[in-house]
Amino acid sequence: MIDGAILVDKDVRILWSNDKHVWFTDQRMASLGLRSPADLVGRPVEQVIPHSRMREVVETGRSLPLDIMRYGDHTLLVSRLPLRDGDGAVIGAIAFALKNSLTYLRPIAERFNTLQTRLARMEQELAASRAPKYTVENLVGFSPPMLQVKRLVRKAGQSGSGVLLLGETGTGKELVAHAIHAASERADRPFVGVNVAAVPENLLEAEFFGVAPGAYTGAARQPRPGKFQLAHGGTLFLDEIGDMPLPLQAKLLRVLQEREVEPLGSNQIVTVDVRIIAATSRSLPDMVRADAFRADLYYRLNVFPIQLPALRDRKEDLEILASLFSERAAAGINQPMRELTPSALDRLHAHDWPGNVRELANVIEQVYVRTDGPRIEGADFADILPAASRPTQPARSRPLAEAVDELERTLIQKALEESGGNKLEAARALGLSRTNLYAKLQKHGIGSASPKA
Image (cartoon, rainbow, N blue to C red; front, side, top):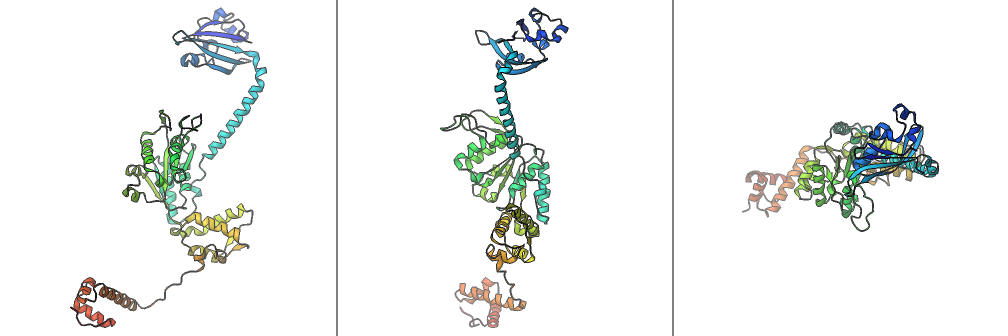
């Protein structure tokens, strides 16, 4: 089966070659004056075979049992093996070329090519899933708070520092994290997000740092990379960072400082290059004071804070957001888009939106599912936003003097109750002289104006 064999020493110089070797049919050999195996002895292997990998085998001591190599007009299947002495030291290498074997190996080669194509497609799909889904252009709104957010997002994209996104639930923290990554130099690298609150506490360490083979009963035989390894070179988004347990906070701090992770069940250190974007709807300073969050980790994360405004604080954006969600809801159920009437917008403005933008998207979707009509009317929100169907009436205006007199009477009565009717103590509590208190008691007709000891 062998169409050629060659032997090299520890300096990768040719010691021997058989006379069947394919290169003796190549014109290049004739131009070098090489006409027999004896002419090859002592020459560096690369002089005869420019793309030889024999040096790699000698230097690493690792075999290359199956490799395809082009040589002139020939396609060769080559096996390369290191040679060792009695002490195990590498003293050379030997290679076998199988010129005519490719015909028999074609079914295997075709299967290999199919698997390679499938692997390449899966890698592309995985890369697409790790790519940023949103950019700054996806941040909808032109209110002053949103213009400030967009400015900070662009600035954060130019910086390599960690970012801490602050804001209530539903304000779009994950969308902003994607936009920062897309605006950064890491945009072509992975964006990996993990919701800390959604992962069971006993699995958090494995989720973040990975698992070595056989780390615990039932662990896979292959290493499973953690989020830090998956995000290497890119961005790791840690949502709800305030829910991270204290022991894991200490390990996360070490990773941020040393840029190294140690997979669960392994003693091997893995270097990682990851930018952290963290987000929380909780007050981290309050948690630090309550010893529920590490102060050193908070200061490490809080390098570039961005406060996302609640929807109630940017109601100028309500109409454009509602129209956007209306278009999406219509497309989702394959219906024509319904225009929002002025009465509908009034109902939306009357609501406080505790769930912020996420709640607005849900409300618009409910309208499409639960009501009919060419347009969205204010009455369509009656069952969806009950509070909005009963707008509060403004209080009746009255003279200022009347309101002041009523407040003064109330305060005096409360002071007398707290002092047990002792007017001297009540006067002191109100910051009045006893004479002034008697005058006000008489003015408001409160009890007797005579002193009480």
